[in-house]
Image 1 (cartoon, rainbow, N blue to C red):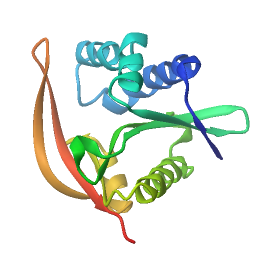
Image 2: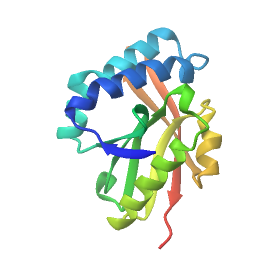
Image 3: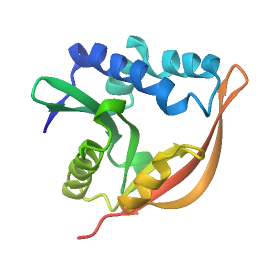
Length: 166
């Protein structure tokens, strides 16, 4: 597996992975209407451009041979703190269980450590089975957060943190 720094010409790959992954990941948790709304809100070309250029999110793709398996986005020094925020991490359903998610998290952990960030943090839907995956990677539930995203929709998340060792 290799990790590639995503550029704007990779946005279509990220969008395709999101459109493929989200219905499987959230189909039993969220309505189809909310999934469509959130995909447009977070993954339109304009939204991705803003995340990269204004919010300074970094997107990485994981690739095996010629196939892109998934992506992660992160932000160093989140809110001016010694934290790296993982904003997104999604793998194609066919790629889950191959170690790609762990590989991405380890890679971002190393980048965070190099930049003297002491914690990785992320949000995950409280009903998402990925909670157990994150716990297996050393994340602990640090709190809960309900975020109004408009159109009557909410993100009901756990906040999970992982302390990075020296």
